[in-house]
Amino acid sequence: MAANHQLQHHLVHPSSFPSYSQLRPGHPLASKQARERERSRASTMAVLVARQGRELQRYSQSTGGRIVVGCIPYRVRPCDGELEVLVITSQKGHGMMFPKGGWEVDESMDEAARREALEEAGVLGDTEPVLGFWHYKSRRYVDQTYEGFMFPLRVADELHQWPEMASRKRTWATVQQVMDGCPHWWMREALERLVARHAVLQSAL
Image (cartoon, rainbow, N blue to C red; front, side, top):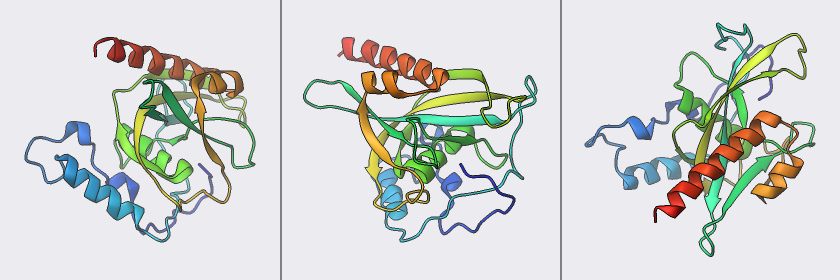
């Protein structure tokens, strides 16, 4: 997510989306139909603006670096049950990675994951239990170590317009394509954990 020192206005604030996994029965957004209406409301917005700046950024007590939250947007092919994952480029149009960005003080961790998916990849969906966390060196600030958390996000909607569509490309890829092409070791490890989790669920069917 781009960093400058201004917090831009939101026509829709993604961090206001609820943490569906934590909603109690009877909550207005607890039903599948209500969640679909909420997604539809977001997808009809003509203009979305990415949150920018680091005034609200959280920092790791163990490393001193930023706490980063990301997600692996995925879908399951109905023909064979295999996973496909959505990858994006960097803002310079290079590489293969998953949406990620700073975890901010006014949102839960899974809300941050969904916000990054919306801002960087233009997708909406439900987050699932966290895959884990990793310590990794910043490429821009070589003396800083970040703490990165990754969630699976099962994609429900792909938007035609999203905040960073002018600076990033998105594409669906196979697991092997990502393993071969993603330069971030910790993202590949997160994907391996998602594949293993999916295999267990498939075997139980």
